[in-house]
Length: 416
Image (cartoon, rainbow, N blue to C red; front, side, top):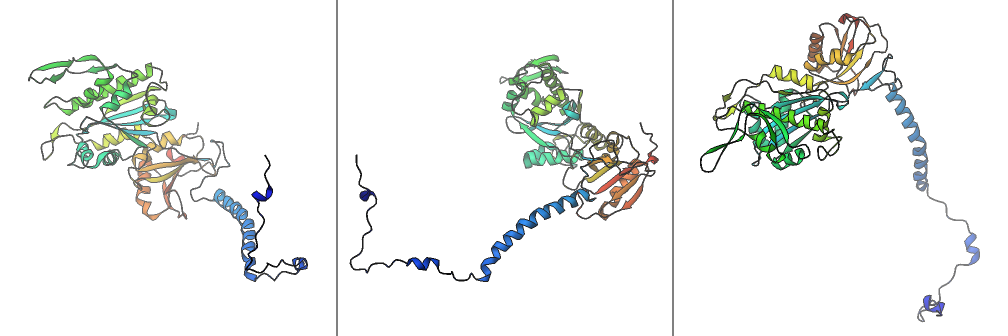
């Protein structure tokens, strides 16, 4: 098929009423252009200047950061035993679990802290009847403010927050435990069910019971009429022991717990099953009642926070600013400052964010340096916790640290 080019590109038509357009003479193409106005050079000059200045700014900023003493780390030193070595501390992997019944009432609270490298750890079971401010129970806080409010309340009890939370309803409990069920639980008493005709039946007898996944939520929430909720906390502890043991026996593989493997609840229970772990009940007083007659427990806060220090050796603050950000340094050489000194400092309100060595070893006197006058009192608390040391104020511009604790030989230590 032939196509005429003229059909695709028709010749330009001239309006008969319009005079023909004049073409620019050829010699006009070589004429000198008009001078550019001065302001047209501003943008090119600025672009060149920025291209030169940005690399210089980055270079100078990098030098300033590496040389800074305002809480930044000297990354060039990589030997942990060398003077001047410092490293950031990652907070203890932690999680909070809220168990609810089919009506979204809080029936269980648990907090997990994993040991180093996710090998074992501690799980704390807290009864929802625990008072958090002398008048409100955890169950009441959850009812009014949801999981976010309950999280804040538990964090206040422990003086430490967690990385994340999980809320499990009966359907979720079934899904999470399906791969390892039935779970063996050591029941201290019979679980008796009330039937529609007014009679009762024993659902599970006291002793070792095998609980299918579909009944896990019921057993966790089980509370006989008038029963002391402390008994339910004990049953919940037995549930966790049974589940963690089942996960360990199943090999802790990716299919043992659905969902997350390297985060969330899946990471927590696998980590517990992968080492030495403890499941403990919260220390609470004997059963009492609130003003409106609800059963309630008063927590033994000192004992509870002692468990928290074991469970969360490097805690997050319960709320921003609730703990002083601390750099903990070995001034003697060869000290395990993390295990020897951080627990006492954490009890006194520290959030350890940096651990390392002094610029030079041979420091004779422990020194607690606070970098803001507002932290003088907590610096004194750190001194009291250590039993020795000299307080010093040293301001730092834009510091990311509140207090530096330099351990000296006055702590009565001998290097290894």
